[in-house]
Structure formats: C-alpha cells, structure tokens
Image 1 (cartoon, rainbow, N blue to C red):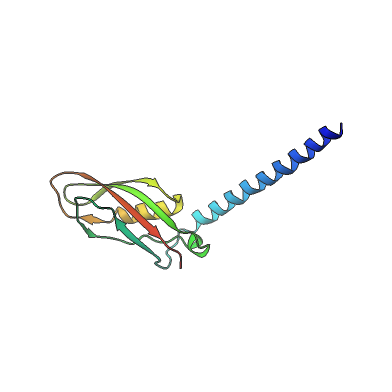
Image 2: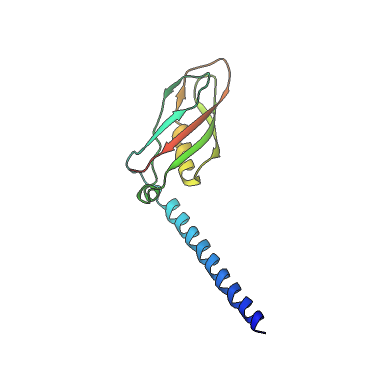
Length: 130
C-alpha cells in the first residue's frame, strides 16, 4: 500500500510539472506571435551560393518580443524565382516559426537578376538580437 501511494505522489508531481512547462511554452509562443510589430534592425540576410545574382534585398522585421527576449537564430528558406527575377513563392525549410514568417515576408520582396528559366534559390536569414 505504501508503494502504491508513493507512485501516486510521484506521478502527480511529474504530471503537474510537465503540464506547467507546456503551459509556459504555449504562453511564450502566444506572446511572441502577437508582437510582430516593426522593430530595430538586428539581423543580416545572406543568400546561399547559386546561379542567380541577387539584385535587391529587404531586411525582415525582427519580432519585438523575440528580440527583447534575446531569441535569435537562422531561418532556412527555398525561394522560387521566376525568369524575370521576381520571387513567386517561398517555402520554410527550418528555423523558428515566428522568425520564419518575418523572413518569408521579406524574401518575397527580393529581386534577382533575370535568367533563362524559373529557379529555386536556397536562402538563409540570420536574426541576431542586440
């Protein structure tokens, strides 16, 4: 009986702790996504090596909540570039989802040198909190 009672206490403590961590993570995510306001520029953008020359870039907005919390990182994207150099589609390949949304919005405004056909360009956007 004592062993069963001990297991019950441990189960409740561990269950309560993991539930709290989940709620904390969810709360942080909600705060971060709600704060997608313009902020200080604190990141650089670099296209990967490819056949198309990058003509114009637009820096992504750094989500204020993530910058304030000193959360940064790399976002990997794949941009579909039309023959005329405009970006028609951007797919997220990896990175923080909140930062990725900002990176996608910026890369959609980029312009590449015209080429003979549509190409896919790999792009890495770096967010560095200051």
